[in-house]
Length: 416
Ligand SMILES: NC(=O)c1ccc[n+]([C@@H]2O[C@H](COP(=O)([O-])OP(=O)(O)OC[C@H]3O[C@@H](n4cnc5c(N)ncnc54)[C@H](OP(=O)(O)O)[C@@H]3O)[C@@H](O)[C@H]2O)c1
Image (tube, rainbow, N blue to C red):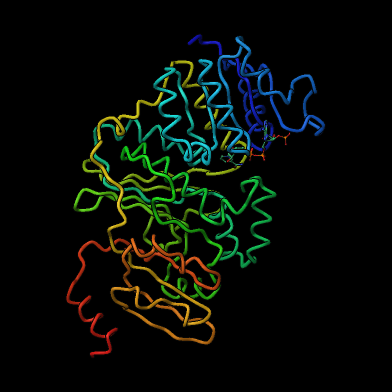
């Protein structure tokens, strides 16, 4: 690819405008935005109207444009744009996790077929460079697990609720006003966005191509104030955490759930729109990454870094997909969870292998127990209004004590 990059930019919202501003603050950068495609031509813009078009083909068919930067908020339209750009031999940079996660396999094949780079660092943790680290650094050192806060807006909301005692709606509004939230905030608070990101990270870390429907995920909507009181009482915080861990049988456990985080945990002080991720590997032991996971400039900085990487023809090699072909995603593991309800009849106690704690308070009953992940994957009783399920700090239970299970079975059967 020529070192001079001529960019066709799709989207001029929070991130698109952010990128425009960042590019104009780095004049030494050998690239220029030739045209910008937006949806609504009548919207007032900060720059002259001749920069814009609403016709995608103007950018996609322009042979003078060699890079398409896709920063729109419509995943279906984004997929068509990216597909066409790759087919036309243009390099592509995107921040659209929903689009990438939902079409990962097809996008992967398109890159192989057309031999053009497709980079998307900003899609996972905005300014925190995690995809390229997973691709390059953990190339030889075997990764055993990672877990992290990978959605900036829910972390911002949880911080505002628990640190500043704001109510949920006010905290969400602040996240939207700051440009942290998705256009459809349900994608954030329902856990869909973090699950899409986990799906992308699984491919780059363990070579597993999986859609979010294949693992357990939930968001933060059902977390109750009383849950925060329980957390506070034990010196914990509640964070939305994405986790992936190689089990003893070599299979991969993955999930996104609200999770109690202890004070000694690196994720404990990851607040507001920051993201944080801890990797554990065979030789390096632990790494902790932290960076801004949302917002115009932090996200634009990751997009800029991808554009810059195109100047030296960087592309993802997907080594884990090609070489770690034996890693299989599984829901065959146990999870230690806290479940609270506004009405104790809503808890499916018989689903649990065993229950360690059971508290029955007025309009707030809760338990801590161990449940098989496949049972959570098969049924969504635990996602219903009035029920909140939070993973415990030591969430994955590998060594199941069958004596406890049989004791529990006897109790459930009313024998003891
Ligand atoms: N905001 C963040 O902190 C953040 C962080 C990481 C990743 N991202 C990702 O970055 C992308 C953009 O997010 P954003 O926050 O910048 O969204 P946004 O502020 O809502 O802006 C969306 C832009 O996309 C344009 N658009 C929508 N549909 C289009 C279409 N079919 N063709 C051309 N343009 C179209 C809109 O045009 P009009 O201006 O005409 O309405 C608008 O300029 C999303 O994929 C998001 O998930 C965002």
